Length: 352
Image (tube, rainbow, N blue to C red; front, side, top):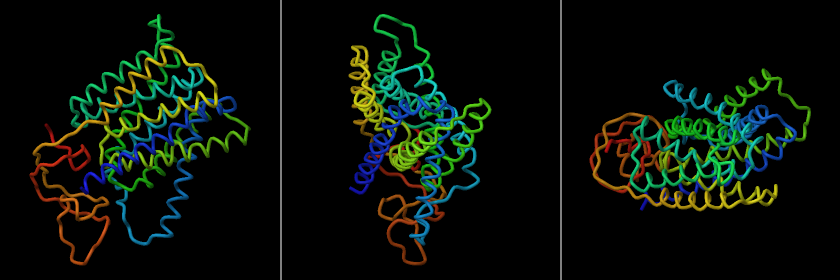
């Protein structure tokens, strides 16, 4: 029951992350009329980093006990990978948005699920079942249909290529972030926001991209806090329980929200090709979120630090003092073999 509750909470976090990110494409499309693409990408991440930093300061003032594990030196390779990929992906996306409609870009972002899943399987050895494979195939087909300039052409549009490149970068980045998901999500978002934002800003200056439109800059920073900062926070929280591939599957709601806003705000037309891609994408998303995984498995002994409690059947270590509720400290898991329904979180990375 406790595991079901944690999984349900993680699913809600992933959907909330999707809803927040879903507003980014149509609003970014509007702001790009007054801001160059690389500068826009930098402002989105700087808005995320600065906004979440203020949230983090508020949390530290209000809470004295440490409930989350801090980032350590061993996490640096994944942090560097996360930042570099986060610099590249939004730049590709902003360039793509200048050449593609916002709803097409929003749905093409769903290819991120495919990229994330394949990278999780092939590089990070995350288990992916038959339903997830079917979902990957359907989402790939939907992305391919949507990439066509029109229903009778096999020529990929330049805007589609850039959006797909952004999705692939985010696929790698999602897996790097998954390796950090047991650490403090707020700290990760602050590092990600300032690291990626400053890097993108340096590239924007090198390209001589600048803007004196203070109002649009302010809007971009606010958009970055909600669509990137809060979204990434909930996304990382979901990855703790669901793993990289499944979190991305639930995150598929983001493009549909983006499409809805594009219809309302930008009044962009709907084509038969677009509707076909939408139907296939919805079918793929259904199979992605309905996968069930249970078998007998073995946990090897390991030592690490993350937020946990002692009611989940995996954290059986003993404290000298009385500890209640969730807390964080370095602890050791003894080897354990059992069977239960589980998701590929960082405690369930066994091979199949």
